[in-house]
Length: 334
Image (cartoon, rainbow, N blue to C red; front, side, top):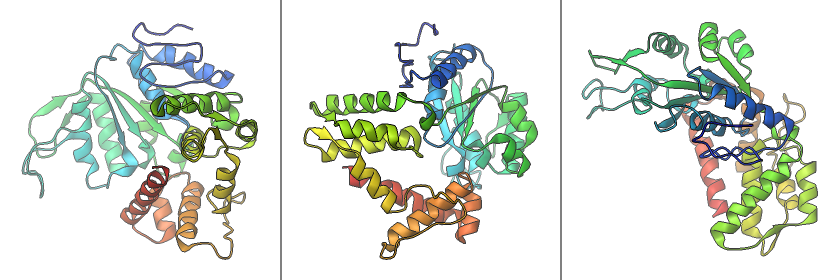
């Protein structure tokens, strides 16, 4: 397989600057599709479970496009409060609203001449989806509070961990916007369907860690067996975090089974019955709350607004909880 001359490729499918690796048939098909659509300006919709590598795929598309020397900008549409998303997308003028003490360029301006990734696009409020559709079709927009129209020269790639058809049926995504974004759809396979890629990726992450720490740590035979047996519900992101934790704990040989068993004991594995969550007596309140929140998010396929409604908390509270879990995990790894 060949790629655009600016990208660097190995037999494993490594696209610089995006470390997207894989020898499996499923990933080779992804590489083939990226090679086809990359040099065009077509809009791409990336679908796949959380942690499956959608942003890396977007970077690979950018790297083998004619826009590769331009900026690559990513924005998580589900992480921005509804009242701020228009300003984040299109920018605003000084004094256009309370707190606007200076002018600000939105992601469309910052990605000018390059590629813009709209991550979790199905989490965007419906009124903003209407505005986005109009901008994508006309390539024209205004900063908030501005009277001068701007012209956009941006290649848009969108991504979602939800089934886009179901998102349309449930009223989470405009059907006309779906057709505009999904000119060229690419589905990223979950890690459990990638066979030997699991060990390949684990070795890649371990090699990086060894290079950073100037060590020569290795995986045990049991760890390699664990790699094959675990279902990896968190996909590549879970695998990478697991390797990093095991690397920190190991003197010379990495073991994975204890880490994954502890995660299952804390209730961090997705429940078999998605409508029920079993909690062990004696579990810590922090762990029970985290398990409930993560299971609810899993049940609603990552839709934070629906999860917050079901949990009886505000969207801001849910984001604060999730940010807290992320920070505690980073601290535990340091």
